[in-house]
Length: 172
Image 1 (tube, helix red, strand yellow):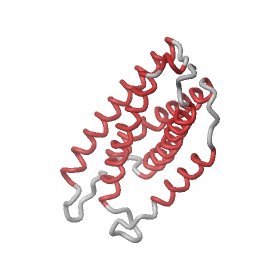
Image 2 (cartoon, helix red, strand yellow):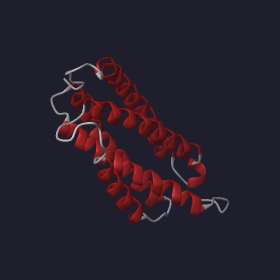
Image 3 (tube, rainbow, N blue to C red):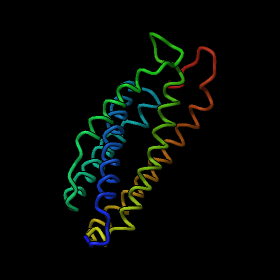
Image 4 (cartoon, rainbow, N blue to C red):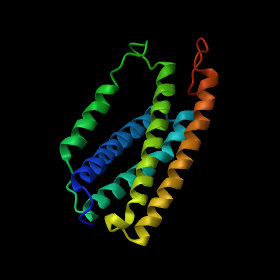
């Protein structure tokens, strides 16, 4: 890395993305279990391994550029994700039809942020000392995020069409 880089800002940026990736993995794992056998589960399940691999790539990137992992950020984000599951959704004992819609909307927004993160790292790759192989990884991660965005957008089209039907399920 060059001396011109503000490693303090870089550490914040990368650790925030690791925290976000941790939350994303937890949320998508839970969604895959909760919506197993539904249209939501079918779309979400392949994302579990992709997000796990992306998080591992970020952790290797931290190590490569010599930035320590800030565990408190990861733990805090994980706790916040779990607390976010307690939100009121109009149903006390059962899942609300809104749950799937809101979770997929949130996830699609997170994918957009993640893609921007990959693009930022790619733009800074030479200053970070990343190799051509790492740059190729980042290019592939942007493409993967674009595909994830398309899958979730298609899923939202399905959910939008049925979310407010009386007695209907958005996840069938």
